[in-house]
Amino acid sequence: MTTPLQFEQWSHAMQSRIEHVLTTTMPADTETPITLHQAMRYAVLGGGKRVRALLAYAAGEFCGAPLAHIDISAAAVELIHAFSLVHDDMPCMDDDDLRRGKPSTHKQFGDATALLAGDALQSLAFELIASNQLSIEASQKVNILYCLAFATGSRGMAGGQSIDLESTGIKLSQPQLAHMHALKTGALMHAAAMMGAYTAPNADTQKYQAVDTFAKAIGLTFQVVDDILDAEADSATLGKTAGKDAEQDKSTYVTLLGLNTAKSLAQSLYQQALAPLEAYAQEADMLRSLASFITQRQF
Amino acid sequence: MTTPLQFEQWSHAMQSRIEHVLTTTMPADTETPITLHQAMRYAVLGGGKRVRALLAYAAGEFCGAPLAHIDISAAAVELIHAFSLVHDDMPCMDDDDLRRGKPSTHKQFGDATALLAGDALQSLAFELIASNQLSIEASQKVNILYCLAFATGSRGMAGGQSIDLESTGIKLSQPQLAHMHALKTGALMHAAAMMGAYTAPNADTQKYQAVDTFAKAIGLTFQVVDDILDAEADSATLGKTAGKDAEQDKSTYVTLLGLNTAKSLAQSLYQQALAPLEAYAQEADMLRSLASFITQRQF
Image 1 (spheres, helix red, strand yellow):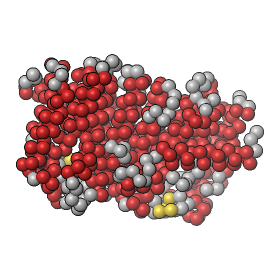
Image 2 (cartoon, one colour; image 1 turned 45 degrees about the vertical axis):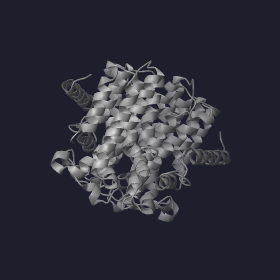
Image 3 (cartoon, rainbow over the protein chains, first blue to last red; image 1 turned 120 degrees about the vertical axis):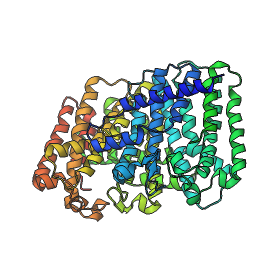
Image 4 (cartoon, each protein chain N blue to C red; image 1 turned 180 degrees about the vertical axis):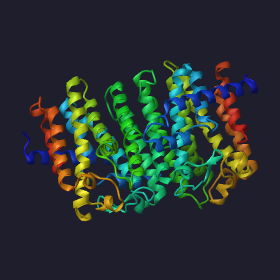
């Protein structure tokens, strides 16, 4: 079993690693069009827990992929996540001025540039995987690209955001809420893990299956914990505007179940995430530790 | 040489074909999330000249690809084009209420849904190419995906839009204007033709090169003609708000060169587009006719 210290060291190492990958693969902020590239880098670099990148690294290593091959998948999924935050914060969506403890991208660069920066971050994610910066088989790339595109689109993240929009002011049932979050947050976290796994050249089907089941449960755990944190935390701890959910009359696990039942649900989902890893010893330790981190995080 | 009637028949056939491909490959408007899928279909179906699809079909056939294989590349590039129009029309960008003779997507569905619909259309383009709906080699798919992603992003279309934003109210030089348009409009038209070409299993390098040179020139021709039409036409003919460029104090070929010189430039670019096709007989006829159509179009 990984100790908390070992996990902390690993996650810090991977966070530094992905920051370096993103810093060097994104267009420089001295390259024309400068404002757009500045906005893209502002939206992506220097912040965030990089949970999706950690999922890609942990799942990729579990399946036997070399770290250097996982880098681009991890970067791509972080680019998609960052693009979704930029658009989500815009006035016509959540209208949020604060992100990762600093002004959100549209507050810093204006709405038009934020819109374009989000669009271009999405394209860049696909471009990086298709580019020769990732040296794996073309068939693996196609799997990874399909997985990411599907998770990003109307049957994934964008679909979840749309259901979220439509359900503001409406009390959702728990299955409806779970469905919305499975798309809005879960799809991309699931994709992150699968993209890491698909980077491995010859993993067995059972391992892919384990990552698949693990990632679905942990994606939902993440969202339940997010709702709990939003209800409990203040903005300073959270690095974004707290209490927005209640203010915007959105259905959350806390408004639906109450705080205590939401906390029990997070624990039970965490156990569901661990179950498919039971067949594996040390090789699954980092996935287990990551699941524990996601469940117990305070920010 | 193709007669004008033959070209008209071909382009009508291809327009019907791409409409059918888009209608059947996009998520149904009865599929959850319904509003998002309705907005996506509204933005894409039932309108437009489908110039980018025509470029993919003509270049693909020139290189020897079967039509059925070009369909998905043609659809993907139209999805990207439609997404760019949805975002471009939004209040924080060009704030345009009219598109293809009907209310623009954000006027019909609201800004938030339009934003998400644009985002999801972009993902769908990449998803379709990576999916098993396109039966070509994985290495060809990766080429096509890279080509499309690059053309869509900050070094392509989004970059051109950003330069356009920044240069409003500034008088650009002709090289600066050409650079902006090479990115804003040219990149995706070039990609359309290259994606068609890459769909062919075994085209020779010389043919790829000819498509490349042709597509760069015709992309610029398209934009010069667009500027001329914007300056000359009224909204009813154009199907979108006319005279917006002058109203928004944007640099165009007409404001820079005057109407007559802009028309001469369009003719000269048309000749540049034809040059690389001189080595080819009948097989390049449709590309030649398409170039003529793009140069002489009245809408």
